[in-house]
Image (cartoon, rainbow, N blue to C red):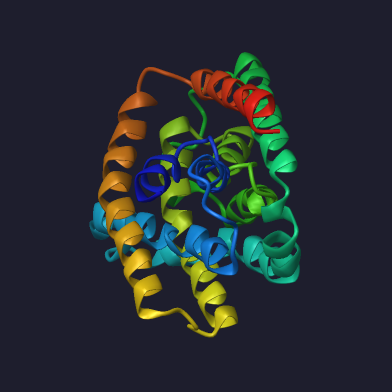
Length: 248
């Protein structure tokens, strides 16, 4: 589960969907702890971003303001719909599978029509606060399991005129407050009522996801130098079809 989380968190293929579907394949019952595990394990990926972009994060005050502007819509909607997402949507495998599949179709159609322009924003410093806020609204759509936080954020940024590398890196950094808030809120709601063994399981998943996420970040940055996201779109469609045939 740590490997799956670390590799998929920053790719536009939905880490949450992969964790839930992996749990189904491994026949892990969807208990309250497992649901919390699937949220909290993402902290490993957050730490990977913190380590990879440590110079950027700790050297620019403007960065914090823009990330906060983008985080705000997700924080509000996530707080409002927390119970619906955890208690209803995370149990609806059919919704997750179809969201993964349709998200692949959207990725392919988007990339077919999208063309990067020379005038597109090429650095995070040049993104306006208004566009940061709009990117946050796109990210908020990903509270629906299967949508993919990375996909929603990246497509939103491309629509708003950001260069591919710029929005990918912004998506990485936006994951910091988003995942940290989601994990912390889930821990508070659960009342830290985990057994010692369960904390051990969380630590194992967290540690593995951290190291794999670093590799995933490097892979995506290298991948987008010469490629768009059509390949991920086809992957999502294939994954959705496989689970429709063999799981649903």
